[in-house]
Amino acid sequence: MIGKTKKIKKIRMKRKKRVRGKISGTADHPRISVFRSTTHIYAQAIDDAAGQTVASASTLSKELKGKLGADIGMPTHQASDAQGDILQALLALGYSDKEAAISLKALPADVGVSDGIKLALKALSRA
Image (tube, rainbow, N blue to C red):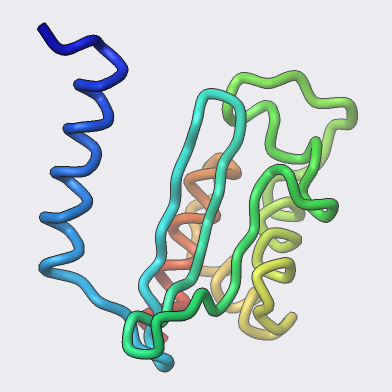
C-alpha cells in the first residue's frame, strides 16, 4: 500500500506532466509556476525555450518575509495592505512600477494576497 505522502507526490507529478504537455513559456510570455506548501509560497516565471527561470519570489525572500502570513495561515508580525504586498511581490519578481500598477488595477478589491499575486502574474503574462 502506498503511503499518503507518496500518493500525494505521485498525483502532483502526474498533474505536472499533464500541464507541462500543454503549456510552455517563452521570453515574451513566461510560464508561471506557483507552489504553496503548508508554510510558504514560491512563485517562478519560467522561459521554457531557454530553460531558465526569469524571475522568482517566495515568502522566504527578504522582501516578502512576514508579509504573506495571514493569507496562508501563518501569524504576521505587522499588518499591511494586501495591494501593497502584491505590489512588493511583483517588484521582487522584477516587474517595473508601471507594469505592477497596471496589473493591480485589474484586480478585484477584496482579493487576498496569494490569489492577488496569481491573478496579477496572469494579467502580466497576457499583456
